[in-house]
Length: 274
Image 1 (tube, rainbow, N blue to C red):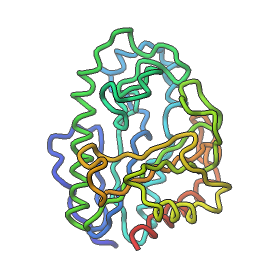
Image 2: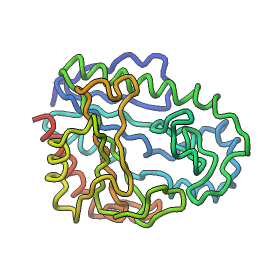
Image 3: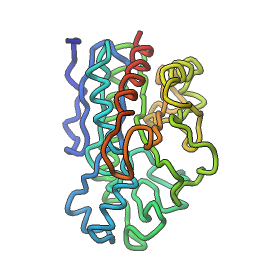
């Protein structure tokens, strides 16, 4: 067993996310923001879709099985990484969007609070005020994630946020940059927070999965705004996994590729902590 530490103070946090402690000396936080299908009843009441249409939308928008992937990696890694897991669907709020006009996905109704579906159909009424959902869910999540990164910096001198995502095998209408390659593994990078050596470690770890691409069809990596372009000790990498490499979709069960993903992501975590 690896030695573990109690999580940083998240007393203000609702039960909409969980920080799962890892080893004291691990700088790695596996961030899993889009794995859940859970939509609380008060939020469901503000969504226009019928039940069947909502289930279909969740099939398309959810990064299915990524929480299970992160859990398996935490179990297998030599030094247990920390995990920050969103327990609610991104249809409640998307914690990785800017909560204001800086967010480019507002162009397709997918800012921090979505108003359109993956196929650009109405999701919420026109003119809906996003502020109550942002106050209730987005800001506590951001504060807790910031605290988790601060804790790793204090404990180890660095923090490495590895975003665990999946993406549709075929382009969906909401994608703004979906014309490029769709490799089995897409690595999203940030010019300030993703050092070349981190990309190299990831390329080596995922080399056996059929191909690794950079920033296509999705680019960027999540860093709490307190540290964004300010703290070089915070590293970040987004791992986007094309869904047909590990599951039947949309919304289906895992396939044989899942175990290979566990091995590859564990290899990356061990390389980062080694």
